[in-house]
Image (cartoon, rainbow, N blue to C red; front, side, top):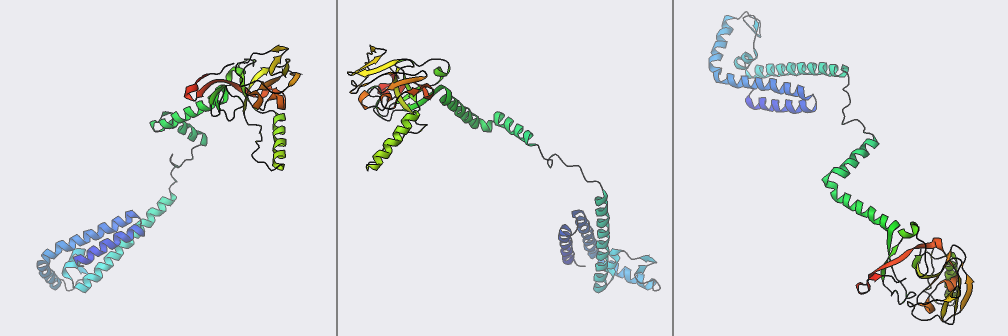
Amino acid sequence: MDRYNSRQLCAFSTCSGAFVLRPRAARSVSKCLSLRWRASRAGSRFRPCLARISRNDERQNTAAVPGEVNGKPESLPDVAWGTSSIEQRMLTEQATEELVEKVRERWSTSEESDDTSPAPAATSATQKIPVVQQWQVWWQRLWRDDKFADVRVFTASFLAAVFIRAFVVEPRYIPSLSMYPTFDVGDQLLVDKVTLKLGRHIQRGDVVVFYPPPALIEASKETAKALNAAGETGAHQYGARDAMIKRVVALGGDVVEIRDGRLYVNGEAQIETYIAESPDYQWGPVQVPDGYLVVLGDNRSNSLDSHVWGFLPERNVIGRAVFRYWPLTRVGTIEH
């Protein structure tokens, strides 16, 4: 076999072994054929001398069996050097087939042994990790890995903000002029929620933020229906989670009366320096039930408050307005 065909056969055997046989069998075929090609290449250098020796041996051993020299089988290099090209190719193909057959037998034997061998134990990579353990690993990485530093800071800040807003202090803004001149439209303030939970009682003069009582919700719905029937739009309907702000003027058990532009609590006229103008209506006298409050707007004649919809349950109070932080020109505490 010439050098070119030997290289082709080596390449073909390697590729076919990689896809058909096992990698180990493919390497064996490639190695054997590579050795055969090297022997053929080395023998080509001594072809003239060995050809003469081969002819002399043929004359001396005419009675020998064809394919044998001196009663011994011809070696593979002698076949390549001393025979014709046709015989050389036939014998080489035959040797290659025998070699491939031996490799296949060896491969089938190794495959049977592999099938009968016990299955390897599952590695830790293929084992299913429990969900609890996965969460523990993830939690440790979250709190120790520097890659999650920003996540830790954001989470801590967010939880702190939610806790503060829900239980300590809450920002609010003023949408109307019902509390003018104490608050103007657009003022922003902080509402204290923790002191009432810690046992501080509501006092007269406190400015409180509260949820509207059921009477106000029903009255706003009826008013909106009447305005819509008259062709007017834009009437506001209060919901259970809306927030209002007013000033407490009377507590449970007090007797309240508004007359002659003055506020009377338990028969005593109140001095109110924070109102915009004197009220232009008459109301009372009425006694406040226990657990309820009377709240009025500082803009007495332009406020939807207790003189319209009645008493406010104490449970509806969200907190006390204690500090105004906007606008900057009016920053300060709230007058009580």
